[in-house]
Length: 142
Image 1 (spheres, one colour):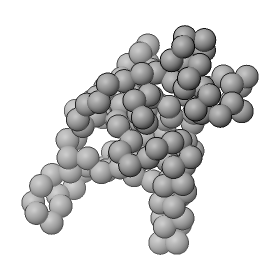
Image 2 (cartoon, helix red, strand yellow; image 1 turned 90 degrees about the vertical axis):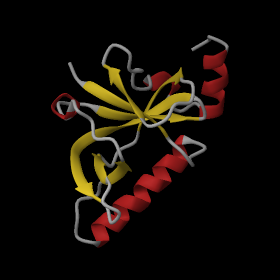
Image 3 (tube, one colour; image 1 turned 45 degrees about the vertical axis):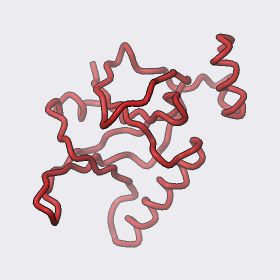
Image 4 (cartoon, one colour; image 1 turned 120 degrees about the horizontal axis):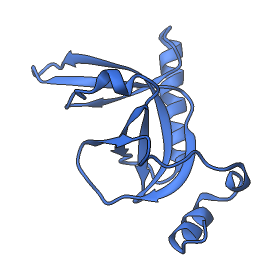
C-alpha cells in the first residue's frame, strides 16, 4: 500500500492557481532541457522515502481542504548555500483533482496513509466549479 504526503499549498487560492504554478515550473524545466516536472523544496527529509516512492503522491491542502494531488516521482537531498540540509520533492506534471477533505492548518508536511487519502474526483462532479463543490461538501451533500 502506498504512503503519501500531505502539505499546505501556501499562496494558491485554487486548484487553477496550483495548475498555473505547475505549468510555469514545467516550462522552465523544459527550457533548461529537463523533464517537465515541478518540485517542492522542504527542510525535513522524509524517513519513509521507499514507501513514498512506491506509488505515493503529494496531496495539496488549499483553503482548508485537500483538493488535489501530484505523483511523487523522486526525493532528492541537498545542502543549501547556508549549509542547511533540504530535499526536493520531485512531482509529476499532472495535478489531479480529489474529493474535498477538510484539514486544519499545520506546519511542514504529514504522512497520509492510503486509507486516509481522499479519492480522485468522481467523473460526475469533475465539471462542477470548485466553489460549488466546496459548498456542497461542507453541507454534507457530496
